[in-house]
Length: 443
Image (cartoon, rainbow, N blue to C red; front, top):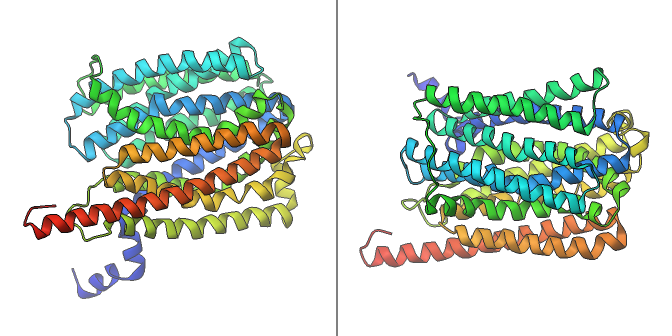
């Protein structure tokens, strides 16, 4: 390679592209998935708000919020445990495949049943609609997501993204097809999702995974598989309580109209979190390396560097939403129709959530590199407890204003506690390494 090529590769743009072990390349794939997911979400939002009034849409989003909390148990927990067991502990593919695919099936069935029971208590929808939506999200979709992680560890990150793009593509096709045929109802949507997701899951498990060399078999998940999954599932479920518990609480207190307009505003604000979610997803497994041979402050420096970038992006995204809201009103009028007009009053306050979210997740992921899984789970659980207390205190009194206040306060709490823990445990790890080096023992 010529010296000019070497200089080009060492330039600032090249260094940025290759930073964080090639994060930029994986981020492009993650971005492609999220662009498709955002498009599917916005199409669903635009069409559903044309056929559902605010109270009906509030109940629908409340059901999804409850399902999302349980999704941490059905596929986020098992899937992230798969990634950890492979990339951190280098366990054999077939061994973890048999354990975690079985675990996902069992967890999916149990979580589906529990979520249905809770939905009957808190969500004002017919039983058949609750069953169809919940089963499609917590059972069929969970099989797709766990299979996609198996694809990643047998192939690579882009291969996993392509599988998920197939699932999102099904949603992008299903909703408009039901709308144009005048069949878009919650019941028909749930049935369509269940059939399409089930077919894709079957193809992945019985066709795609064997093509990648997996010996398809199921076995009773060992205790350590449940434990590994719980390490991720518990804090993620707690995180979802913080993110989506407000929508469930609004429904539980009978504020279905407030739930509808709040969910509409939340959907707009989620557009601003798009780049943060993309980079965070691509960066996750890069924090699993122990970093034992690196200099002091290794994980803290990496977390601070990435969070700095995300914080700037978060404020830029928030600013873009303000511009659309106040200067490009035709766009916001297109996104939010007249029935949900009050949602426009919620967006300016809720958008402050975006830069806070940008700096709360990275230190918590970096704690995994320090081996502080229990401590990470404790932080998430404490944040969920704070959120739940705020929801039951503020929402009955203030409605959607209480939901906004609770969201911002709980996310601020998570930022403060996560960074305090990251600094504390990094210093603790550095002191331990220093003592080991002084004694002549590997750290």
